[in-house]
Image 1 (tube, one colour):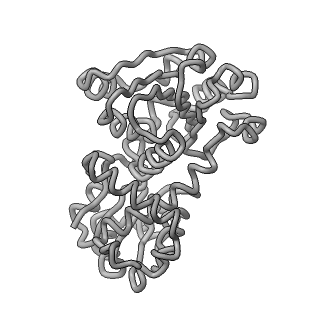
Image 2 (image 1 turned 180 degrees about the horizontal axis):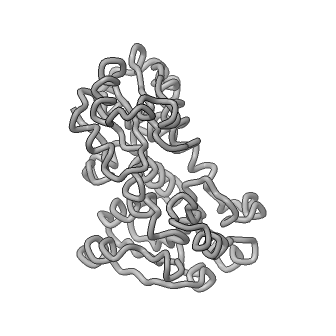
Length: 309
């Protein structure tokens, strides 16, 4: 039995196989429409989510399975003080696989240690968000035709952004990757990631404050919102939240084949005027998220795809 706690739980070869499966699902959805008939997915979401929860649920429904779960801690027995380990032991009696989001880092890891079904980490605090990373990798590969030899700009909240941390960990395993880290001083990438991931793997990167300085050199611009829920006081959040706003004028500085990604939700860090730019790929990214989660569910449940004809 396998779980997904981090993008590093899959080798590069396994990731490529997973992304190939997701692309086949996109091309031939009818081939997979009953692959999970009789299987149940539980979504255990201890903090709010729209895309991540609903895309997991859509993925299972698209595969012919069924869903159950809760969308906030207040609507579960966690409100009564039940532990994560007891919750997952209970859910294991009802479902075949589960996706968990939790505000505490490491909570999904605790769950998988007590679970008798596969557990998907759907985001834990500021730590990891591996299914978003799988979505990002599929999006980049489909748009650019490769995952090697690229300059990736990461902009916004690089300190608390779990999507950024997961994506860096995944991309450093591909050849020719360079990063431009775009953030204010207060939201810089954590030192442990710079040293333990980038420096240790000899990955070239530069840190800049101005988004305009980075735009001309990028293949991908990955925007993130400043996350109000990660700040300890309102004053710091208000000071940081409008630090970056991608608009039409800034897009003029970017190459014609640069694409803009965003894990969403956005607040105002990407102006709506950018939505009509053909390089704005963040809503296509949402659709890719369903395909890659379908592929992940099939993989973790070890459902033989070659029999789905």
